[in-house]
Image 1 (cartoon, one colour):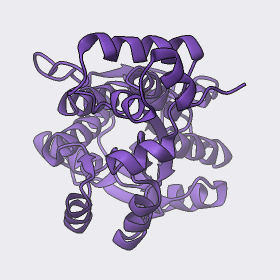
Image 2 (cartoon, one colour):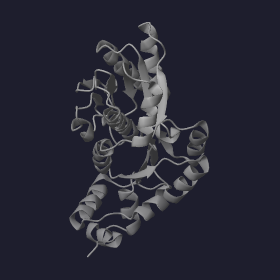
Image 3 (cartoon, helix red, strand yellow):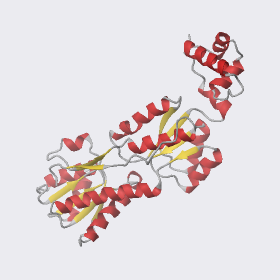
Length: 319
């Protein structure tokens, strides 16, 4: 039988109102012994406060919404949000995953419907979205524009440096055709271009394609191999281009060199095995949630600088 607030009140010897206030974090006027008695009764009865009731009492729910950008993360999503779910659950908060909204109006409907304690985003909010969230009293946590841009640029720089070190003198960038799925592509392209100019090479050629073999064949034809190194937006695109190169009978990496991003499981079983880049995908989310919990007063303010997002080159047989 599911315990109710009146059951907790009866066991603790207090009113239902006292139970509600204490368990909703508004029990400052009660003595320490009363608060402890109510919490012990709730624990003994395995009482779980109503989410709807908490939202009504506090003006917000215990939900924390994480907005997922419309891009390809593969299995990384589970790693990113698995630890986040546990972090928040320890503080009595529930993580809800939603695809990023396409308009500010859609974000407004989401906030109205769920009354979240906060919204986390892996990509920066627009000015209009920030204004809406501030007006509704919802805390917004997002990556800093400067750090996000530098991270993506460093990915491109690392890809370009590796291709050049392996002998490529002509570089290209392969990005996703659908711009909505390519939120990090421009920074990575800029990083490749920066290294090309530093090394006295021509600016990289840029092709856009989907995860589609016909599009990969067309993109490879436009790049006019042989003797080209391609920095790919992710491992999916790199795998498509690897298949296209094999169909066109180009030697990989002798005539076409490829480097991906994300170190997906598929990248490790291609023939030859894909050269790619890995990093701790959980670090930025852990940092964001630690800061969020400290703002709520749930945990101490994190000491020291955020964890560095260290990129690691996974050399395979495509470079």
